Length: 120
View (tube, rainbow, N blue to C red):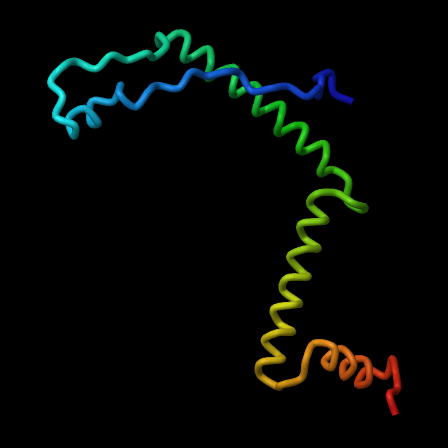
């Protein structure tokens, strides 16, 4: 086991810089006054960035723990299963377009050709 706690945590709060703080926006608007920027000092920005890096590393470890299980109802297994189903439906619709046999008819033909079920 790991000594890290995997408790649900919230990302650190980061104050966004307003759009009026960008010189390009003021140039487009034709303003001549200097932009007022409500940004954090560089030291505080670096500390906030480090907090976010720590937060997302923990989130990545939590995701890794959840994906370690190979069998069963895991998020990765469900995504993979959904992708196979979408591909199968697409190929079934493509085959229906090419042959005129609907999806149920295709399944019946496949079962009859493989000898699983005899429809005669």
